[in-house]
Image 1 (cartoon, rainbow, N blue to C red):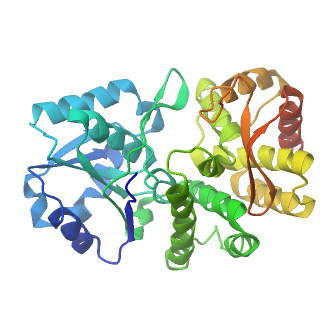
Image 2 (image 1 turned 30 degrees about the vertical axis):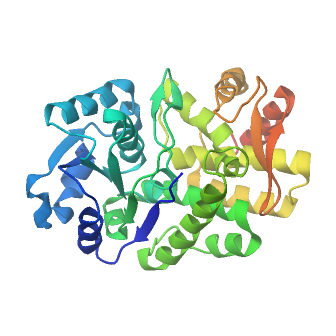
Length: 353
């Protein structure tokens, strides 16, 4: 897999000019959602090359990351005469870069694309690493391909359009990267003030977090072993996220991952001796920052069923990435249903549910 270039921009217009200039392209297409079209597109429209860009705008929200929306993007590309030599620019959060990357990767058997994430979560997670896809049959990212963008251009100015919830949602992935990397990174990240959210102070933390993910992806691009570390917190987190939609009380992805990390840190402590003091520290931080999502023991069977659909599962058993300590990654850890239910009990008890 070709290594993608991730650029944290000081001048998004200049970087985009360079990126477009380096691509032999016939036409340019841009995918936005209703929010990024209104709030973010104007920043790029100052570029003269955008006079003839074909802009496709879809509905916002993860509930629209589906086959119907994907088909509408393919139809747009077809109607506007896109070819394999066209370029797709995905301007938006993780939903846009996931779906837009998949559309570009499959239309005419593949056209080039650039990601410009407009959310912190998208910048540190979905836009980087080459994973693309859509939700299907109620399961997160069930259909997709691994195909990296030509470039990922990150402009933190876009984050000023986000509310506090969406900012801390993105921080969950940064917390995860610190946990799977090393103690010094964890110590640095947990001192960041998530109330004031100074974007200047965030920039070096963001750069380091993306670099952690890039190193892992470069070593294991197709998720044969080490890249599974990036799913820490996601096996339970995706189940929380899916059931939140079933309950018609949808939660942001980063919140679900944060709650998933509580459960998976508990399993790490119980099964692999992850330090109790760090577990307590992480639980306290997550409780203070993300609050809680209500579940009861009546939900455990459904959550377990949702976990069985996690893409890391090579067998019928649920396959976790757990931690023996900060940076001590243990992939392919199978657990029993009883242990998973204990982790859900721990989650409920820790958050006062």
